[in-house]
Image 1 (cartoon, rainbow, N blue to C red):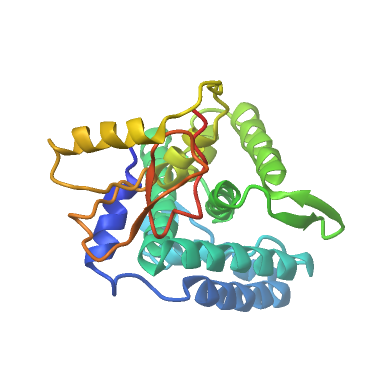
Image 2: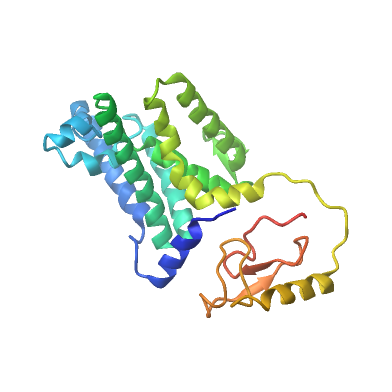
Length: 276
């Protein structure tokens, strides 16, 4: 399966200073400020939501301010802010600052494009916030850490993969209960998730397991024969990076995978084991 994230990883590797460090910290602080202002004055929130018609009339701050629209004006918003700060910080730690910055703002740009295209096609000025952007971010976290447990509703322990299924059902409900083309927003919002985690999600799908034992010496010889016609010696089975593109990157082979599969230092302990 084609993994578009490989190109993004290569770009970030070649530009190590790209991105906004601690992006979620700044977003969370700004969210809290806007939440406080919304609690003080509810009409204030109407001035920060995304509205294509008003943006074209000069209210260009809405292109940015909609990212900071609070999920609620109640105290529950504080718990939501903490939850997404934790998820975003974890993704940045896993992917790196550059990749996480691209991930988040890809969701923002896709949402903005959707809003303008819908407005120009239908003439209806759809009002948007960032809720679907954060939900798609949660999907990525669930793919990376499917068995991590959290307290659902801050009471019930549940694994991340099951919460992700609940999110997916919410997305599907939104698609089937909203009229076209406004029901496309959930689809657009998860495109950045598919770009970054589509290949990982594909590898997580259940497959028929092979009962045959693997001859590692024979597999090693086969790999060496294949590599004679290639420019690289090692290639990560997850991200696709090679020792030619990244000469300082360490590569290893996983003994728990079925077959003879190589992984970079970033993924040797963080991948779905091959079963056939």
